[in-house]
Length: 152
Image 1 (cartoon, helix red, strand yellow):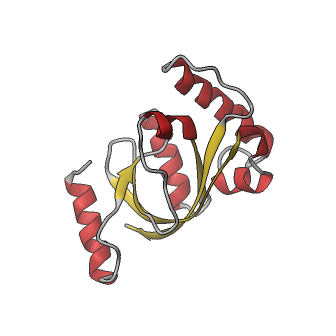
Image 2: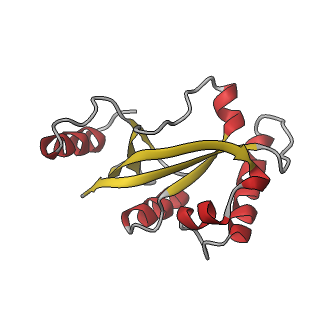
């Protein structure tokens, strides 16, 4: 994925961090413009320092998992770069073993585990419907933590 705002943000970041890795990934949160905007805003506010994704989709798409040290350019709902974050920790755990701490670090809603489970169960069920797989509470989840490095 490449657009002018991504390239410009990366160039601006590299000016003040010339030793930054040469590679990055650019992506947005969620499955809608509204969700991407809302979650990117939480990153910019410093409330969101973690995310969770569906491990099964990485497997099916033969996509590499995020890893510690990965540089991420976070996009808003319009695909514009709004922040750069570095992945600091990744673990794959069953849905029903995601911790209260992780839910809090995701920064969404009231930041409780109960809220996290409700929202993510709905989200994962929707993803699984598209590929005819049933959701269950042992579904592996990629729990990623990150730190904000740069924002405009």
